[in-house]
Length: 112
Image (cartoon, rainbow, N blue to C red; front, side, top):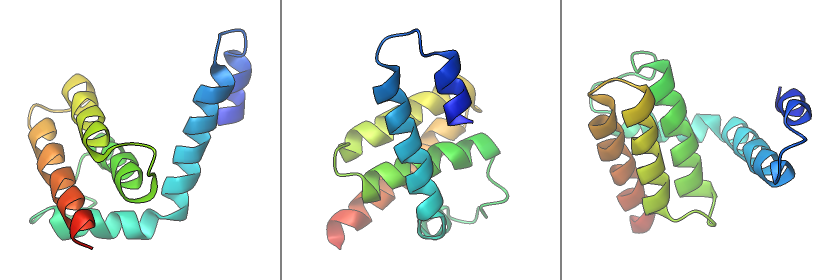
């Protein structure tokens, strides 16, 4: 799917860099999905993964991958971007839920 999207947008500037990072995210989340979901389950306070809106779950999976596995993205940036995506595209309650959960992941990561 990423290759098809890149072909459709190859006439735009910086597409190799953008799609390179998109591929890194998709591969990273896929490679670490069990560990990422373990973080989500540990800090979701009564919410199962299946009960979370699919969009929220996806936003958080990307953010957890950035926080835990990608040292190039500061934790605060990953959290802020996830919250902004939730504000734009998800429910009214999603930004605060995502913010709280991701901040717990950040604090746990620092404690390790």
